[in-house]
Image (cartoon, helix red, strand yellow):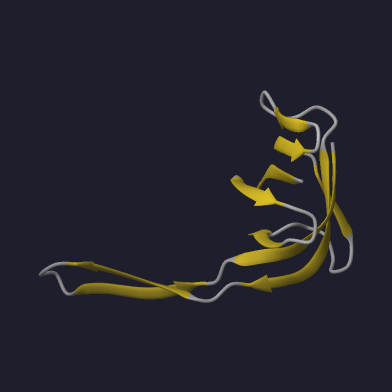
Length: 103
């Protein structure tokens, strides 16, 4: 059984037991999260595709970690003008473990 869920503007294919990194969610470590934007569910009875979401389908997950990703270096410059700018960015994320898919 697997499902496709949307969170943080991105789509993820998940199955029970999977661990995924998503955009930062406001929950604490150890809390349960309910992802209700389920776009597709595949199970024993076949594939159900939502329009846009599958009615009554929910994916339950547990928060494993709240952290920042590795640093991305950004370098901007203007040619022949001696203008250079270098800075970094660390994107916050939430690591989730998928507990169950309820369709």
